Amino acid sequence: MTPQIQILVSRAAYDRWTGLLHQAAPDARWVTVAADGETSDPDPRPDVMWLSIDTFFDGTVTPMLELAMRSPTLRWAHSASAGVDAAFFGDLARQGVRLSTTHVNGISIAEYVMAQVLACYQPHGQWRADQSDHQWRRAEFREVIGTTWLVIGLGGIGAAVAERARAFGATTLGVRRNPTGRDPVDEIHGPAAIPSLVPRADVVVLAVPGSDQTSKLVDAEFLAAMKPGSILVNVARGSLVDEDALLTALDRGVPERAILDVFETEPLPADSRLWSHPSVVATAHTSAGGAGRHDRTARAFGENLRRYVAGAPIEHETAAADLAIAGAAWALPAGDPE
Image (cartoon, rainbow, N blue to C red; front, side, top):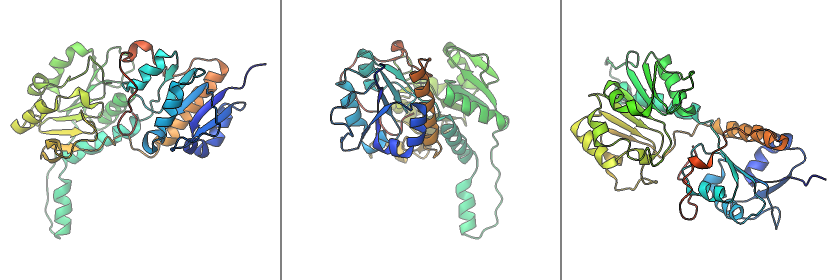
């Protein structure tokens, strides 16, 4: 007789998506974990673990990971995040646990990018002030059509940004290690071409995973190559940008603006100049905050769970080679998982 599969989930996620979860694995046994660490089973032995979005906000991720690290039965862990740079991924992989991630935040993040760039191009503050003062003043603004966007990293997030920029009439340049032939850009290039592409771009969007290869990708040399009037957007990882070099470049006026949703240290320290610099738009790792992402992540896990139970390949499984396996005990990612 095949043993009953046991699945570990947060209590909040189980209560919200009970029907979806049971439909995906009708014969499974579900074990829930509350934010205070209380489990519905005093001796859980999970085969599967789902780290849903809520776990990263209410603290449930801590007891779930602690349980996972000492579980001899865990075979597969699925995360609501898209990135795998948190150290706990490596720790799980060392235990032989299969890992998969979720790629549904492209919608939220791409809408954030477009909104922030449009807010830089259009004088929203002046318009609101004129309305408040009952003043009838006209103002010209910059258009996206005719601009050139460089999107570094064309996974789900970068592709979603490129699609929307093209819809506004921008020329899009994409950088990807392994082009698919279906990438939604006007030009596709490998990483080696970045130095030649940066001077062409009015908007540079960073959407590539954080890694040893991408650490400090945006350094003094990169920034010196940017166009006057250009905008740098980072919705990837704070490690991609040399923040001291960026502040120096912004003081000199190029790039004209930096839109930053991620930082080297999170939360961003209160005394950081990035909070108050007039050319910086700083937000609290919130670009993935679209309300629809919760249901999208649940459906993605449900589909993968159906595949796992059926013995079919799971989607977005992470290879050990993509993980920073070396490292100390697991550490939690800051903010909303991406």
